[in-house]
Amino acid sequence: MLTPQEVSERAFQKASFGGYNMAQVDEFLDILTGDYSALFNENAVLKNKMKVLVDKVEEYRSTEEAMRKALMAAQKMADDLVREAEQKKAEILSRAESEVRNRRAGIDRELEAEAFRLKKAQQETAAYVDKVRALHAKEAEYLSQLEELVPPDTTPAPDPVEEKAAEIDDNVQRLLAQAMEAAAAENLRARAEEEDDDERDMSDTAEFTPGLSPEEDEEEDYPDPEDEDDPPAGSTSRIDFGSLQFGRDYEIT
Image (tube, rainbow, N blue to C red; front, side, top):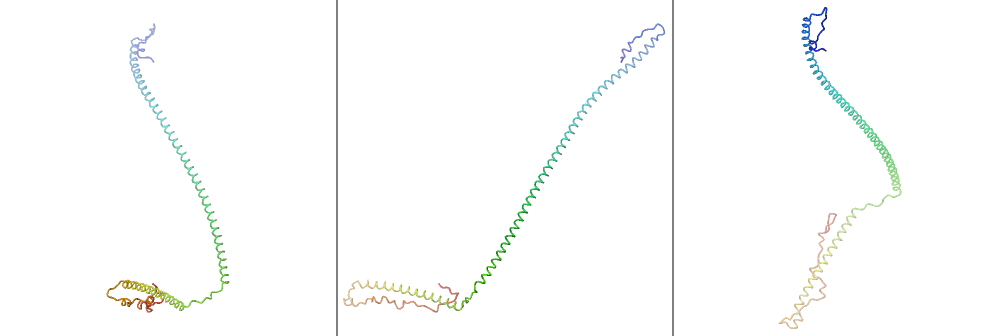
């Protein structure tokens, strides 16, 4: 593209015949140079603006590309997360379903085992009950046979009067024995006291007493040894039969 300076400095060869008017050509070239200069300057400004706009557009394009890449990365990351979540969900569901199936199978097996044991226990219980019933029937039959073999009891019933008389006799014998033991003890005590008195009298007479003659000393009474075996008249114990009590409510002391 010609610059305004090139247009203004353009020179034409003069023709010998029929050439242009040089003044008009110069005037036209001046006008053309002015207009062309304005257009050239405007074009330069527009080019600068276009360059700035192109730079902006390139910047926007680079930013757009970065944003597009970021969006694509985010989309990819989101897709990866969704895919991973779906995979984990599928794994968790599969594992849970497997555990549920295994547990259900285990529970079914336990139920079957318990049902089998229950049925077996019922059968064993029924067999045991049948055995017990059979044994009970045999024992009842055996007892009925024993009743037929054993004669009836013909022992007469005890007479209550005889029982009461025997009880009274036992009480009387026991009281008499106690009374005799008490009397014997009283006799022994009295005899011991009498022997103590005799020993004291003999010790007193063995000493010499002034004023007594030998005859008086010989005439002093001494206890007869034969009388020592006889208990004193008042030492014999008496049995009070009026205090005797009889009956089942009497308690012997």
